[in-house]
Image (cartoon, rainbow over all chains, first blue to last red; front, top):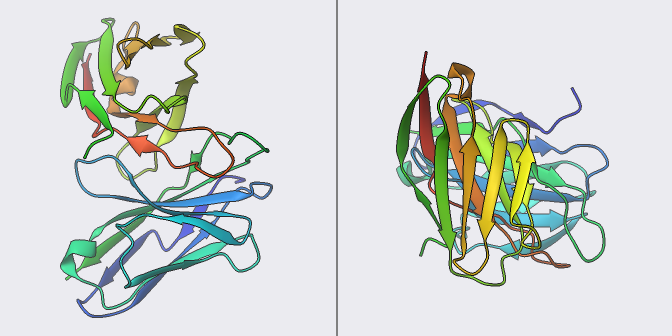
Length: 116
Length: 114
């Protein structure tokens, strides 16, 4: 399968614990995005990378959230000291952006986080 | 503040009928309007997208109509099938060298009865 993959698919954790999610984009894609989706809502943008550079962060991304894309390939999203309000589906997307425009975003299956 | 407003929230259509979902936006800098389809437990999948230099784009049974002056766009699903039952999201974005985020509507849950 050459699509966007995410791991794990499901994560249950207790409040206060740290969690880390991984996203592997489509191999030639230079942009990688993280979105959060709560029940009954559309995805909300969190942050995105072009290669290894983090170019934009939403104000939804509190200090407890950190994302990395160290070698411009896979990315990790870490949530520290999880809260019940962090329960959501975390979606990763990737695209091939050529100068002056961006390509279509392809989404992974998501990681469903439940904070007890 | 919701940048893209979508309606209806839910839609029930009989098999063979036409499903119509509407979206509106305020930011005139938006110039890319995709529609995504999402099945339960899956990530959104790009269905069809339009840029504002055209008023309509058709791909198979799916058509986007775009009204730039009204800042509205809609998805039409012709000959709706039970397999089309899913949640549909409209979105908008600004092209450009640095800003690539998508702004999504809240979604429309479509049910097609056989």
